[in-house]
Image 1 (cartoon, helix red, strand yellow):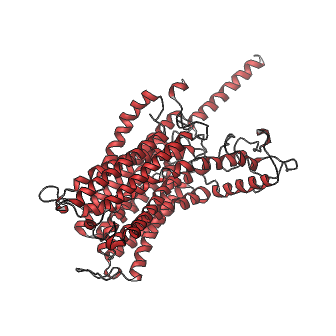
Image 2 (image 1 turned 90 degrees about the vertical axis):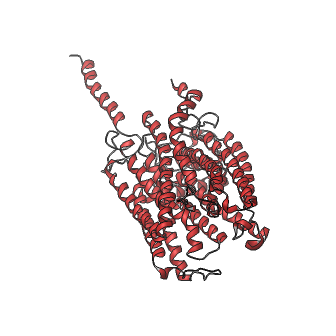
Length: 591
């Protein structure tokens, strides 16, 4: 037998083994629970995702059950004024979502996503237990008040309640940035079949959020109305514990990303080194001057290398190779790699998109405050014997999302795909733009309806179903924008910044809530405080419609700004909004 024939016989099994390896093992650095490279046949995908989706339903049920009832609890049980209660709730929701940045940092740098979710879930659970005790034990609330003015809660009672809410906010901050990213980690980006499933996961994940919200604002609010706040908070407390059990039950099926160190530290290193080299007069003449490690993987643990891009050339100075640099010892505070610089560039690129989608969160924060306050003083009868709880009115928004997501996934996406050639029908940037456009009409609708309610001869006889358009439109805006953000921020994130990227868009909800509080305070001071201003303790004497018109104007200005930013955006692969964003390359162009 000739040598070359023997070599062919030996090489063929090797090539076959390599092919099988590529087909069965993930290429995104994920491992199984034993720490081995994850096998696609045994881990991840839709084998693991249901645990994550069901966990999200349970956790969101607990959160929304508290969120939609808290204004009423603060007013009736803790004896706060309506404007103060509304601002306290928006501040609390704001803190919960801004703290996602802290949770993302801990996950990416130290604990990993799965362990971060578990640890912060127990913190969340502790807060729910304290909140239930606050509603159950009389000594933790001021005495029952039948006639105003009511005695305020003591400092100790207020401190106990705020500690409970604080723990829930911290728990939310640790869980939320990790759950969607952990779910997306179950799909290999380099596998075309799994990529399609990943974007389907994002839609069903949003469906899970709204299913949890639906149960929280209907079933739990009804329980609270019929049985009291202790039951209304107690059942979600049990549900929160169940969500931890459900997530842990999938332990053997998950794909895990190991923590990769602090991305924020790497960002600071790039800025420091680039500035230092600039002041020393160093310039980048060609890409050959930029340093990258010679290994297959980058020097960021568990992260793949990133190709150099021409944007933000100033930052390239952090990776410049100077004549007397050591070839063996590298200090990131003196020289960065191309991948580290590109990681920071990816973070900077999405900031304008992030900033121009915050306005929707200002409008969305009204769902749990003034929208519910309107419903409280309207006719909520459904038939002769049933009265809809005011806290359940946001069901209009949740049902819309539950209906629209399957329709969008099963009907609209295939139709748009056939017209545009994009895998997702439209790009994530275009999807966000549709949501922001709808939000303008949502607030216009809210203003028109509130004017009708306020000027009605007998506002209490006006049906609560007049609020349906504003809830429906806000829900539609959220379906388009929220899922678009999930897709966009995950796509544009690097291996080492997945959780931080998810936290960025979640922090918008928090910042939007805080901005809503700031706008309320400014309007109160500018128009005559709670006694004579637009926003009073008595909603019938207020001019809430004026407030809604202001929010609509903000949304219009924001939409224009977003369109300008989105048209100029270029992703980390150099694709624009009019073309594609990373995985949004045209299907026809690949054939």
